[in-house]
Length: 297
Image (cartoon, rainbow, N blue to C red):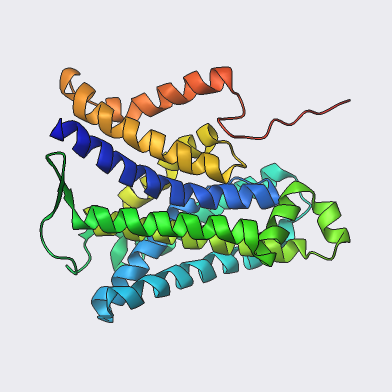
């Protein structure tokens, strides 16, 4: 029983991290109908920025975290302004290829830094041990990640439902021409969507570093692992990203705990979520919460 609880709790924590990173995909897609293939690199930038603030500058975690989030948001904003602004109005495939190019560009830049190779960890700022739930041991790092990710997801939900800027971003996602006629700056919304994507990616990267340490290839891999979450939840659905993230995280852990020991070489953790994804898309091609678009010709 305790083993199952441990798998479920760690799966929920992992799923919420997936959900945070997936929010960046959803925000950019909702605003511009573009899939961002550089999200994993933004995640790595945010995680290593936090490491720089914590280790090199020796700042406290409560100061290093917002600085890392803000820095990565600025990086996302700058990438959109410098590389993607001129592609507004061009075929979507051109913009998607540009994001793939950005991913390789950021890969190269990060490999020029000390963080491009090797593994790193954040200084210990939490007490050792954890709490016990139904016989399962839950570390303080997992509890911190759980609390912070939930707080950030709720904050983003409030932002899009209540704030003026959030409503403007939703209006652009629904109808760009109508939003422009009401005085909404579509170009500004695109840039802010990239800034928000950088912020959510950085938050996910910091949570990964807090729980399991930092490795460049591992962080970028998480950015790719989020694709099933986005597709399963629905490309344009924020609640879908949260639900699908938790579902994928739990399925990965359950497969690793119960199926991997039965399979020579393991690997079911990598495959099982995609199997579930295919089964769901068979019945709901637009994902669990995606908007079904009907075109009349």
